[in-house]
Image 1 (spheres, rainbow, N blue to C red):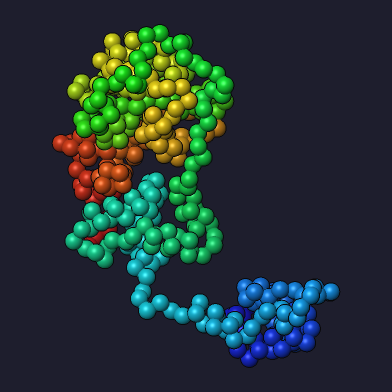
Image 2 (image 1 turned 120 degrees about the vertical axis):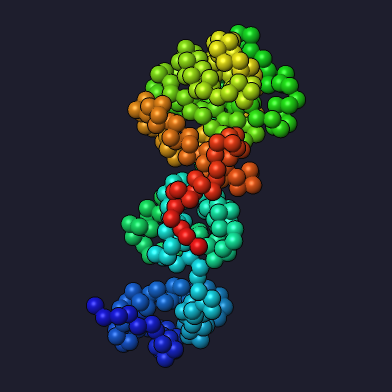
Length: 355
């Protein structure tokens, strides 16, 4: 097949003239030696409307509103080459680095913030999130473009209440309301106060415990054998006791039945448990948002029991080493364990992008 040739101003003038005379697009295509689809696309992208058999009142639209000069001007504008070469070119070192970050679940905004941090002295190795989005959607259609777009995190639907029309208050003994939390929990100045929840798997037959530290957004995942109170105590106790005592002070949870043995959890870990109001997920908004991010790795409708605690630790580490806009593009691990985690060294080990 020969190379496609754009329509010229002469051909567009013929199209306008023959439309005025009442020619059908298929007849025009034959006369110009063009395919019917070429003429159809030209007409539709330039505002052409098919005239009705019985026109309405008033003067009929000449040539179906198609204008050769305007169509040529539009084509010239679209074919003009940019005066400045795009910074993010397919196959370049910067492009490959961006693709690596995307494959790890980073959003374009997080990638832009990371590159700005690790390449602070090299502006040519920095790129805005708008440029990343534009480059992705300008990729030619195909398997690669589909795969890359699949790495993007799109908007999540709002979570449904855990039990519609059912009030579960009174089923958890000795629970302390979120409204009785000490002021320092709301202020989020000192690490150690957490929000907790369960992520459910296929048919609600499997689950994973999630807890997020309110100040640093540090995330910990706990393997659960079942969505029962005993499993919750065992799972949360195991992962919380791996954290130093001064950084496990309290946890805010919803009124799920799995937290019925919260007193034993407090005895095992020293963590004081507070309960949010029924059907009020915004009171644990940090955890709700994190659960949305975790669905990239723990999809709805899948059996979550196949994930070992080591698997869950690896998933949590991905989130904890990912920069967050709300943290000034620092990552949770950098703030939660400042003496044990170096952001620059971590990313230098992951990526080979050199100045």
